[in-house]
Length: 310
Image 1 (cartoon, one colour):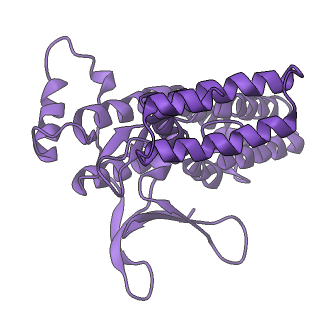
Image 2 (cartoon, helix red, strand yellow):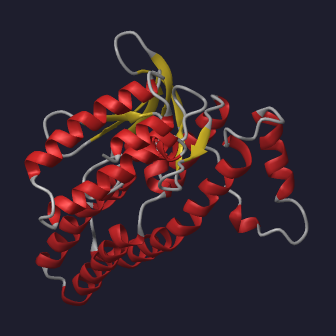
Image 3 (tube, one colour):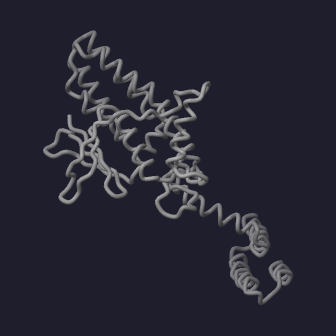
């Protein structure tokens, strides 16, 4: 099995075997795989873990090759849900031996049951250490405080992410770059590697005001919205946020309030057949000109109201 992960500049890279002539190489913005794992829904993976367990159980009972093929196909679908699950595919696809079935089922169950706990641990560490709005202490001090917090009596230790010894080598990853490369054995290895790198690089995160999920700050420190798709129209949280800010600003603008009220009134008349579309179009053009004149202070707000109502 060959699965490697490393970070170069502001991107993370994964190299692994998919059965082709050359290894597959994928890359993402730094911390994207970590955050995607932290918010991976149970609906995306629970059914696949159950299907894999069922296939292994039937393989053990019948020893029929079709169940080994079902297991392999399920691993393919699981790997499509998140890059970290490629590790499971590489570990077991096409390699299941009847004598190994029980051990593999136990490991699959362990992983499936640990995902929710690991997700909570990631978010807790972000809350306490890497949240961009925690500015009173340096990140290293926050990390030390994070460890001390979980050493207190009565604190749930299960909420703390435990960094373990990792299989890391210093290698040449391209023609010009030597860097630390992770050769993971478990999903926890991957999480530990990227979390440790985030702390070491002092990577700040913030909770998006639209979706409520953490995102990595890579540009302006005052950014409040992420680039995740927010709705069925494929609008992102950042686009939704821009619309919300515009609407808030306009709600506080008396010129816009007057214009919007009169516009809606006449639009309703048009829909009810009490005003022709031609008359509405003519009024709209005149209203925009009056609005611009009011903004330029060529007419007063009271004059704008009076002229707009005619």
